[in-house]
Length: 113
Length: 109
Image (tube, each protein chain N blue to C red):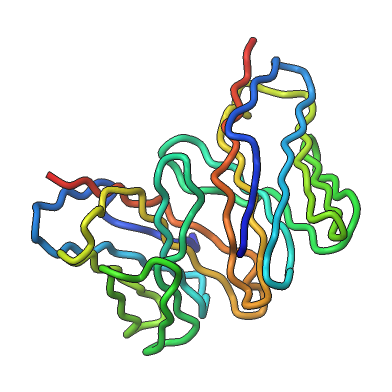
């Protein structure tokens, strides 16, 4: 079955630690996105990528980094510079022709210990 | 600036009809989306409007007025499983989605 997967479902981070969230899709989509969702707020774009080896900052990129070495994969690293990382992180993908239709992964909830 | 406004919470009765409103201000416009999100889960796509008017899809309908910067999602014959948050999002001229905070819909028996 085609789809988009994220792992882990829950992730715990210690102070000063970098953690990496996985996002994989087998939909053959060129574009991939990372969003952050906080209670009572809309989704906010962290980074997006429209092609392998290229990515763009979204509205809240500070404290995060990404890579796009393969079309299927778009991992997000939450660095120690992100002072308030506790949130629900959503990965999405789309075709370039239909960027309006984004398919979301199940999400990763990150908690700081 | 870019902004999406929608009510924080609404309550409705099983079997009834509810309308969730959304107003938007974006730099350019490439469509208005509605997503459903159950607690702790990812959003799922409901509808996309880019032209004025009403789009009907089963029990759900979505309306758009570009001149007013306004959309609504209409849910008919409400079921308990419709209890969820409904997210309104507008796509700007750069094809980026600007998201509202979501409307939590509570369905009562």
